[in-house]
Length: 226
Length: 93
Image (cartoon, rainbow over all chains, first blue to last red; front, side, top):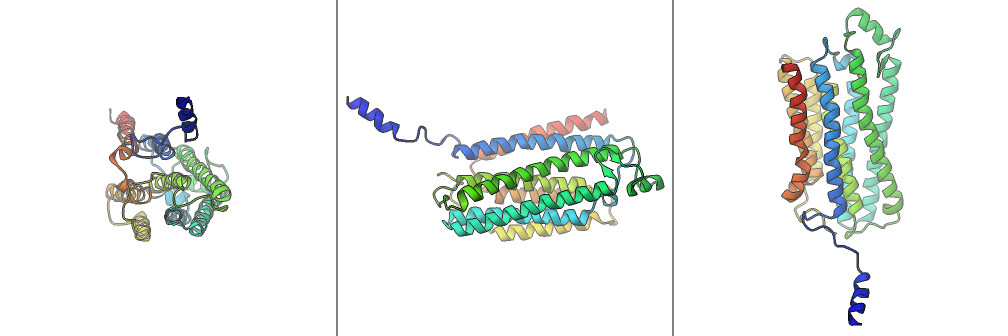
């Protein structure tokens, strides 16, 4: 009988404690394992770009001729700023400051949304000038540059497909991050459900957001500056 | 809730200033400079890795995590290097 009571009492507790072996709670460990798989995903994309570029049957276009480096540099700075605001949101709730969390998380969402907006603007601008995933569109401004010999005709198709694949997948990741943060903002941060003792969601989504920033730092250098 | 090990909080604004300065330096390198293309490539990659490390160590708090979690974060890196080496070696043979 006493054994039955003990079983009932145990049933009131959480089913299992957080995994202790690696000294982190499960959600955080899960996010790190996911990010490790994401490293491989982006390594495949960047690796394909590097291999195609070095093995291309001719010279590669200078990024400055095709792409707007100034706008993207501003966008890079914006993403770095949103990473800082994310870590400030994390620090605010760690200190038990829900208003600080709301302010900094809101700012991060705004920064991420602006990044995606500027990227869409950049894509529209590039396509209007004739740079598409299939290469250079006939009759466009860039097609004239190809005819003048200022852009290499042989590799523009490869350039277009690799550029839009890499930046497009990164933009998709940023969009997913913005949607995730907006969800947490509306359902948990705004109603004040996060406390100094329970802010795992902010830490986990923050890890994802910083990873997206980290990938962009590498992509920006490889795609826009090299 | 378990979080990163107790540690002194890094100065996030100082990291941000570093990141902004390194980005400005990268932009400066993107212009035509009296250095070889290979040197420019090397400098740009060093700056990019430097920035990525700042984000990973201070914003993702890897600097303050235990080695178990650092291992989870680091284990894809050798795989990435193998992937790149295998791909690039195709052009060397």
